[in-house]
Amino acid sequence: MIDVNELRKGVTFELDGNLYKVLEYYFNKPGRGNATIRVKARNLRTGSTIEKTFISGNQVAEARLDFHNSTYLYTDGDTYYFMDIETFEQYGISSHVLGEAAGYLKEELQVKLTFYNNEAIDIELPTSVDLKVTEAEMAVKGDTATGVTKKVTVETGTKVDVPYFVKEGDTIRVDTRTGAYVTRV
Image (cartoon, rainbow, N blue to C red; front, side, top):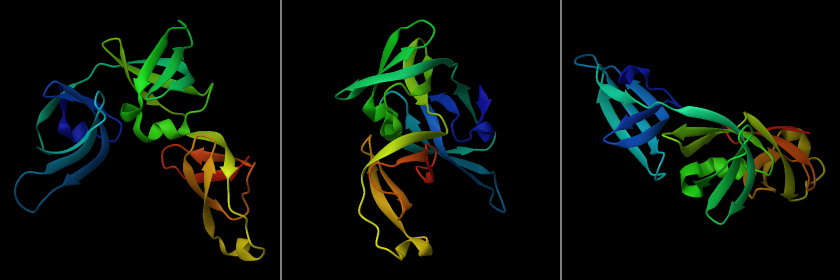
């Protein structure tokens, strides 16, 4: 059992027979009474999100997880397939469980698969990925000095805000935690 005060972004816990990963964490200490901890969490099996409020001092069941370094192989409609680097076993994870992480997956990307009772339930992406820009509007001369941004589409179909000087065919580095442009590669 873990104390709800230890629930932070990225922590996985069990509640009512379901497995949840914390997406957001809020701590509230009113002038009187007990402190409350409000979490927004994603169900790792169904992909749905819940908001739950706990009173400070409550406990939830700790999830025992295993991690395996893996390589992203391909997608087959709604399922994304990964191969364990050491055992060469392949695992599939549904797109609704991956959520926004699916927008950063490209072939041969190294990720860390999360397992619960020998079932692949989640992935941990590297902090940044390099993606090729497939669609970008043209920049107008003179607009690049003001720090204006535009939306471009990268090879995975994700849209990213970038500076005006980025053009189609460029490779950019994107932060997977925030979805923000980092630099041109």
